Length: 318
Image (cartoon, rainbow, N blue to C red; front, side):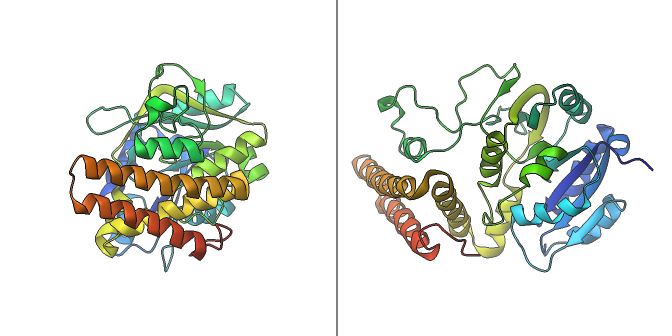
């Protein structure tokens, strides 16, 4: 029996309530004809495994004994791919009825496109960042501090002031809907396993573009992304608003060391420290209270602590 064009790859972590609507949306998009389903459950403590058996019994399901992170969980599915394309889809992302067919058609007719993303909207139809620039120590600093007026022309990571109605190349795409060509995966692999959470897609798109492929934003279909569900469950389970922040800080350090070298990492640390000083000064001048100032100190301390724990961003902590 011939394989279907696309393997839909799903990593689930405590989002049992989203599985049925997510798979229902896929089926309305003709996934029964176009797609196979591959799912990793990342040690959920809700009833996700039971729900998966009810909602999509035909899916290939892997169940981890511990949460190995988003990137490593997706990498577990590489050995099971059979289609021409792989679609990484979050459990909190709901495709439109035309999403699969339109994006597959685009990939079929544009063989230079290695990774494709679509227009992302929230529940209320608000446009979400769907087509992003690579982070640099400078644009991350400017984004945190709100000092953009002093850096005219600087490309911000989540630049939104452009025409979202046209196909365009971009630096990287969010991983909630991430359609990638199988040839790309065979050539450059999928995610760097050192990133536990955050920056996986940024790093992957960097490598994809370096290998000569295009990363493309395709606006002619929309995916509703409600966002943050797995992160929220982590926070509830681990009291992890602080922990989630540490995941992001660590991945940022690993990314800058890998792609900007020690000099870029040093610049990032300098700008992080300066940024927290700027934000603390703003909080003081605007009388936001001691808590806002202490938050700046905690962020700075956490970043320096993780720099040493990761041996100057050369290895992950988990």
